[in-house]
Image: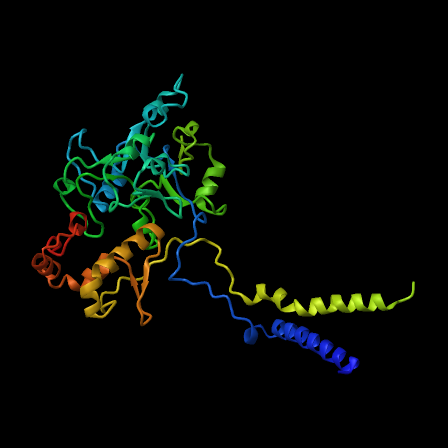
Length: 258
Length: 131
């Protein structure tokens, strides 16, 4: 073959390639497949969201039990009227019980007498999920420490591991302790551990957690800790907050304004 | 400095590279904008108006479907079931019960006959318990 001809074919080939490149850039619709972000059938990406809560103990009223009643009704939490069989998802603790490792010396009376709303902290480094032998409790993609009641074998390792007492064991059939069951959420059975789920069943529907919604004083703020623009992050930026037992390194997602 | 052959080859090569990669520089504009705020897991509306699979398949495999639904929705957050015909369902027992609970004995009749004792109703409210 003629040398010149081979050269010509080579160069025109490269020219066509470059031309295609330019054409696909200029006419993106015809040549490039558009990236469609799937809205539905997609697993959520882990680590993008970290749900958290800020409890403003200044506006949380001493006598008010709205959030506790609402949460325990919505999630069919049984009430056996005995400390021994108590099951709780959200409850009130006196200041020195909620923050036993914070300084208690010469505390002003008003703070000392204050009761703090306590619930599962949905720790970033959750000891309970590490203790669970069946992975029945696990760290979800959105930072929620979730319970898969189907898998729980009732060994209570998680209860021993949790430094906040956020977990309760069903010593008896919980259905006996539910007077007015809510049909939207299942109950648990005897022999499983249960705890707050940050209302994951409501978050899917785009609703705020039941406790946040029911608070008459708006003392609870729920939001994404990973989003610097969120209301909860602004609250954290503008206020001095506390976490429960921060020295344990569990990185709780529930913060308190004292 | 005079322009020699190498200069021309090099500048043409750079031009060629630019032309060839032009499309890739444009990709960022062609794609949909990425939504700013992260979404929680998506869910489909509870639609109980039609069956997710043919009756014969469900008769034999409903337990496998329910088990797969449970695992993927509870653990992975993938809550939306896409049926072969493209319709979407929320992976929830309530999707089934929305219609099947019309016959309160729908589950129990067959399970009693086959002597199987599923543990669903230890926690989930069965059609017998709901008003």
